[in-house]
Length: 129
Image (cartoon, rainbow, N blue to C red; front, side):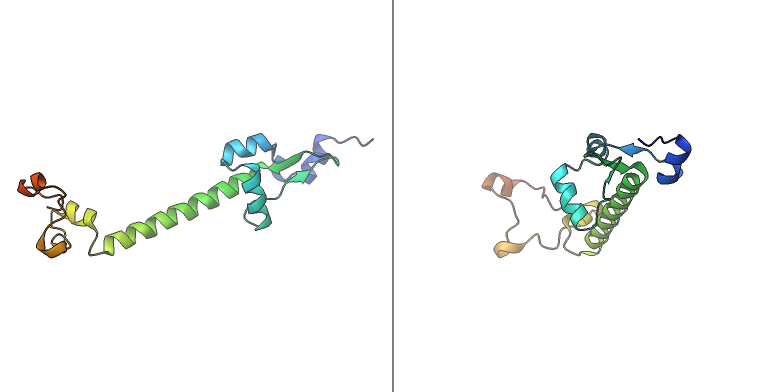
């Protein structure tokens, strides 16, 4: 039987990093076992370690936090890119509504606006104005 002291353990776990079990990893990331397995296979999620030859998987907390930070940065970059595309789209209704302009596609369908019922057509306001 091996006896490990905290000093020896610190050699194997960098910066006295915590070991996280499956339930805590799922709680932190919101990623379930099956999806994690797919992500690990693709090299997008940290691989677990086994301690003492046991069956239980453990993840280093620093690797999980790095995964969360990377996913967050990628998500924010994609959202910023979408916003930039919307801002540059001349047919973006929201952009025109904020700017107080009529939507350029308002009079499609044979010169009629997008109003759905005759009652709406008598209304002087428009969804695009």
